[in-house]
Length: 165
Image (tube, helix red, strand yellow):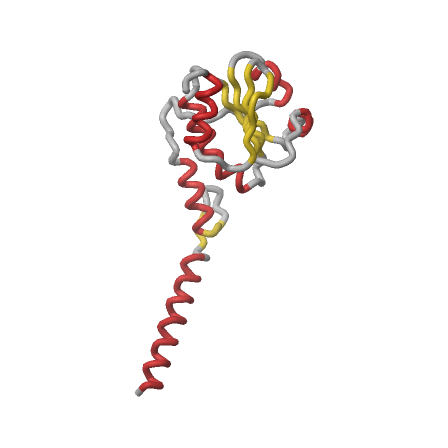
């Protein structure tokens, strides 16, 4: 009897493990018709669900040729990023929300280091790792963060730059 109970327990554990593995690897067709793991599709849906109203807060992509003009006046925050960087993708919704919150008081944008001219701007500021957020006032760097920080910490830095502590 004890042997039968152990065998039944092993079978249950195996079924749960196989079932979980099968669910984890479940492929879902993306909008382009390509099958992707469900987790990838869930991230895409979550990214689209940020806010799709007409004034949705999305930080603009910065053309490296326009960098100096866009950051010359007032307070600016530039997210040095790349499409292949998982930490950059994790920070992206926070940067987008902050762009909406501070839309009338500061310029917040994203610079793709892989874009034409992006690496030269990154080199000019000594960016060695991404994501790097550089905080500028009147075109001059006054602060920076490297890695993923929470929205509250980034918001506090921007408030200090704006004198709104």
